[in-house]
Image (tube, rainbow, N blue to C red):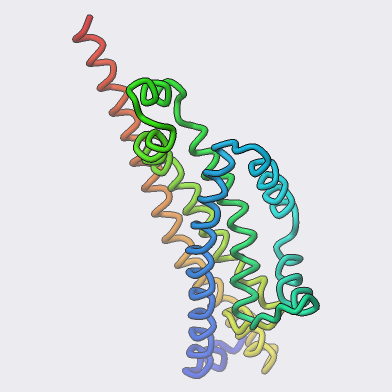
Length: 234
């Protein structure tokens, strides 16, 4: 194991350049997948005739396909249909499609978790369906969705390494190039790659845990306040 040879300035810089590509692809995919996934989740929750069934079929199909297959399709199959994408764009499109399907289920589940009593109370007070969704359901559901959404973002960041199959110059791709120079670089190189991924993913995990703790604490306080109110009324 040649740590000195593997950790030269040029090698570390090359890995950092790859890691920057990884973060860029992950960040853009997170933005688009969250937006698309949220729209799909809300539309499915609304149970619009025909549209909900079509979206359900698309989501379930994508969720049950390997991400690697979707990456292959966007980079190798789309050109056969006249749609040629650059490597980075193909990776972003594939990740966005896959993660949007996953996030749509998180959004839909979050919306379904809101008690029907609150919805009925909002509607009986004169709010329309859209107003109830905007002012009552979504604000509460978003708080509950944050921890699983962050966890899904962590999975997305790790999934970017699959784009090495189409030669995206991300972290693992650059690590393979360095590793190809000498067998003595294998462990040091991939150890550094693991550390880079760990730092970012562990930080996101801490954020998810903290948000989940705050959510549970807030829910506990709300329940206590309800009990106090009931006792005062009694």
